[in-house]
Amino acid sequence: MEVQLQRSYLEYTNALFREGFLDGQFVQLQLLRDDSNPDFVVEVVTLFFEDSERILNELSRALDDQNVDFKKIDANVHQLKGSSSSIGAQRVRNSCIAFRNFCDEQNVEGCLRCLQQVKQEYLLVKAKLEALIRLEQQIVTAGGVVPTLNEFS
Image (cartoon, rainbow, N blue to C red; front, side):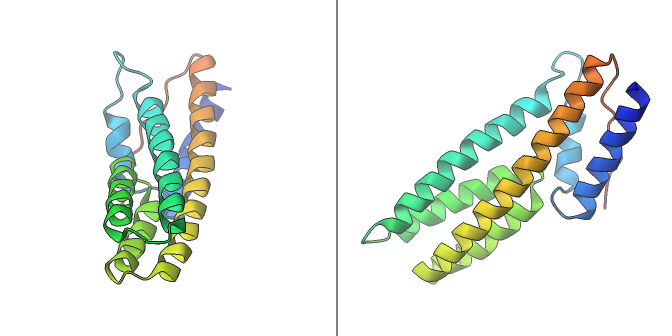
């Protein structure tokens, strides 16, 4: 059972890399997990979820304002880009890059489209990471060790 769960974990994680949801930064994050802090990845990912949802709500409000503050929007998008980069959420990060370009152009319609794209990518990666965390918890509950991935290109 434990070996099968570990295999499923590795296959699922490999798929997330192939599909571009995660990049090598996620592997680096996993390498920081150790016996003294076995929940490190879960804690960091949970903080990413909380920060992302707060930022996405702020972006929605800011784009609804009569006088759109593009500097404020850009600062929020920059923060989301940084936090998604730090956990390896590649598709969210890439969507933020496009979003910042529309902020530079002060293009409200472009920003609104990008906000929807960022939200969609965030919800997708959140669901994928939640499934990965559940697999990790099943492995630990079964008495196993969560496998560490090899470096990806």
